[in-house]
Length: 316
Image (cartoon, rainbow, N blue to C red; front, side, top):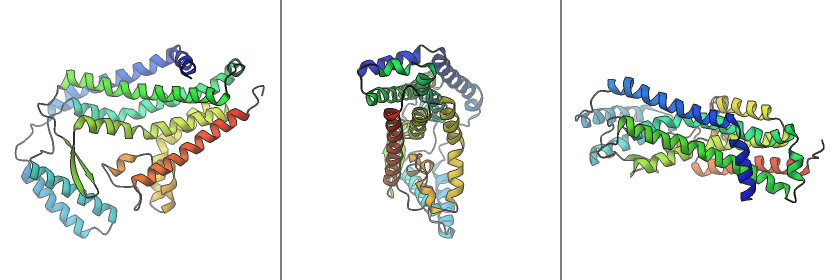
């Protein structure tokens, strides 16, 4: 299996396009950092010491909104904000700090979408290209089980996804440290769960944040891999996956306004951060429910990919 994965990685990194994708990611991170350094950050006002009265006034306004709101999701949001504000006041934790390396790393989490786009391109072509180039026959004449061959390709895609996220996180941290420096004492991230507020080290939070933020990328990559295996068409896999990447969440949000069954749609469950930093898309949704739905979709995608690949006539 290790030799198969090594072989697949060699194929990927022999292509100039792979280095172009990595280069684009690095350039965008660099441009973002320079822009933040010489434009937005310089305009940032100094952190004031008079932050407690601001939070107290905010809590008074939130409590009034909580009393008048008939929507349960809004009520949960107000309760969360009030609890976090009260925790900040009680434990002397300001709600903002000067822009630093960790601020930059968190902002660049938006580029997970770009890393996902590049991973989808790799995933969509890793099987379909073998059929297009006719090299699939050279693979299958070996005394290796077809499932093992396909599994090695999928694991290679996951390794590439991990590499892209690692580059995004690592280079953002390196560049952020150079441009903005480390804070003297980084403020902890305040996590609100089951009505309780707890402190979490900012680095631990960012690792979890990037990990959960990659769920949608992994699911769409898996879907692209399935389409590539079933239809042997990389263009279809890329086109459909990217279309769903950019529109799936919006369509799901619109459907959720009228239909409760929208919670069973894949894109209603890919954003697990909604249970940590926001509110669920629909009342009654929980992290356990979303994880179960993600597992079901994952199993379906993998079953279709492996079943069709094993049954396919290579000569066709």
